[in-house]
Image (cartoon, rainbow, N blue to C red):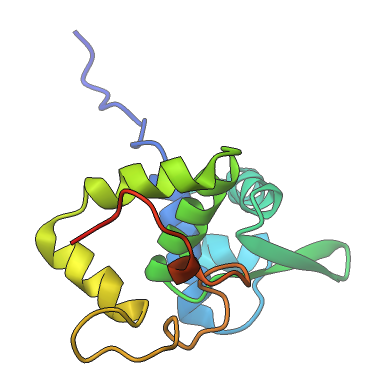
Length: 150
């Protein structure tokens, strides 16, 4: 039996650490900057690979910084990242109505109330969809009728 602990991390953990580092920096970072901020335990090539994968997913943008790239997150925080993932999943299906109906049907009562409030249909709500200008991709989600009823 080996005394060497497993070096494998759970899927996505390194990406989350890199994103957290980029959010904290509030300025573009190179792979070397990220490696240093993470404590130097990871190889620069590992950090560069993680950043390239995040770029491929659209989670970070990159610009040339000499011979390297510098990276900036395209989402502001973990909530923005979760919202982007949800939007991506929705975009994978042609029948948005059914996907959204199934999503809403699985929400807790409190989450459904919150969603209705954000969409302007709950108590204390207004007629805007949250005010961020990016909630519904331009369409008014309240204009659709379907199996989503109180």
